[in-house]
Structures are given as structure tokens and as C-alpha cells.
Image (cartoon, rainbow, N blue to C red; front, side):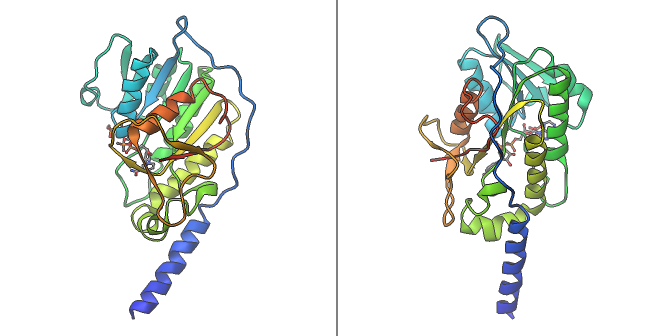
Length: 251
Ligand SMILES: NC(=O)c1ccc[n+]([C@@H]2O[C@H](COP(=O)([O-])OP(=O)(O)OC[C@H]3O[C@@H](n4cnc5c(N)ncnc54)[C@H](OP(=O)(O)O)[C@@H]3O)[C@@H](O)[C@H]2O)c1
């Protein structure tokens, strides 16, 4: 009996992964990063109260950027700084995004959620709303956190994740994530970078990690601290190397 279950599971897991496979995004020529307020870039951070988002806020402020944190619950942020503005909103609500978007030079999104066990469109529709608000406010650059295991990195999250964890716990989440990536790739209004980390940890910033198009591996996957993902994402604010592509990032 267990052999039949195993075979059926394998068929399900492989078929599910097959539907996540997409062609690698193409490189698009980048415009120059737009800077406001003298030398300071104005960075809008979506998902600022989350694990990666909080690191993004802290590091962006340390780097001297003017930061706007887009949050559902301002009281949860608990970061205060003269260069930090907090805007309350929801990515499913376009007017609240529009309010946060005015005058920004770049949007960095670490959007995620915990509604794992049923279908949602928070990543895909939320990200479409972000890009719509960007277009309306002529914000030129979008850096978005995704994950290894979708598109042309299917399998690179490692065997246990590919065959067990993703199809068992995150099937709807990943389906939404594929739709999110597609909406970014098909968008011609902004210069974008999709950042695909492996398993996230809360470890300290190392400042040393691998990035590129052959990150992750098919056996054990790999990991990286949210602090280092934030470091890499913020580097994309002024670096054009990965514009129009989806690099992976891992130790
Ligand atoms: N966990 C992993 O190993 C792993 C690996 C690779 C990639 N990723 C992906 O990386 C991303 C960041 O992960 P994380 O664990 O650092 O983030 P997280 O702690 O899950 O934070 C997600 C953020 O998104 C916000 N958010 C959720 N729904 C929203 C909405 N409707 N409107 C506005 N904001 C909303 C949350 O706000 P609240 O604080 O109000 O809930 C929170 O600030 C996620 O997409 C995740 O799936 C995770």
C-alpha cells in the first residue's frame, strides 16, 4: 500500500514542479537609477514589518536612503529614524499604494504571508498593484523578493523541498509566486530585478554570499540569512547588472 502512495506522491510532486517551470527572464536595458533629495535615493519598502523587510528598512537607513515603510500595522514596525516615513496600507488596496508611491525612486518588496493552506492572490495581485502604482507615479525601478524553486530554478531548492515541502505545504503559495514573477517579467514599464533566495534564516549579516543564475543545488538546496538577502536587494538599487533577470542568492 505504501508503495502505491509513494508512487502517487512522486507523480503529483513531479507534475506540480513541472508546472512551475518557466523560461529564464530576458535582460532588459536599464534606465539610469533616478535619485531624489540630492544624493539620497528614496526607497519604498513593501512588507517592512516582515523578516526581510525589517532588515531592508534598517540597512537602507544605515546607507543614508530616505525610506518609506509600507505596512499594514504601523505599531508593529518599532523603528524610528528621521529619514523614515511610515505609510499604512495594504497591497490589495491600490489607493493606499498610490499614497506611498509619490516621489519614490525605487520600490523594494519583501512581501509574504502565512496563509499557506488555501489559494490566495496576495503575491500576484498585490505585486500587480505595486507595479500599477509605480507606473502611475513614474517610479522606475522594482526589486522583488521571490524564491529558488520557481521558473528556471525548479529543483534548486533541494530534493526534500522539491519533492516534499513545496508540494505538500506550499503548493498554492508557489503557484501564486509563479504568477507574481510572470506579471513582473511581462511588465515593460519598470526596470525590475527578481531576487530568488534559498531557505531564509535569521542569522547575522555576513556580507559574503553567492549570487547569479546557478545558485542552489538539486540535493540539499541551501540557505541565506534575511539580513544578507536585504544586503543583496539594496545593492540592486544602484547596480544595473541584474536588471531584467532573476538571480539566485545563497551562501
Ligand atoms: N521562509 C523561507 O525560507 C523563504 C525562502 C525563500 C523566499 N521566501 C520568501 O521571501 C519573502 C519574504 O519572507 P520573510 O519571511 O522575510 O517575510 P515575512 O516575515 O513573511 O513578511 C512578509 C511581509 O509582508 C507583509 N504583508 C503580507 N500581506 C500583506 C498585504 N496584503 N499588504 C501589505 N503587506 C503585507 C507582512 O505584513 P504583516 O507583518 O502585517 O503580516 C510582512 O511585513 C516571502 O515572499 C517568502 O515567501 C521565504
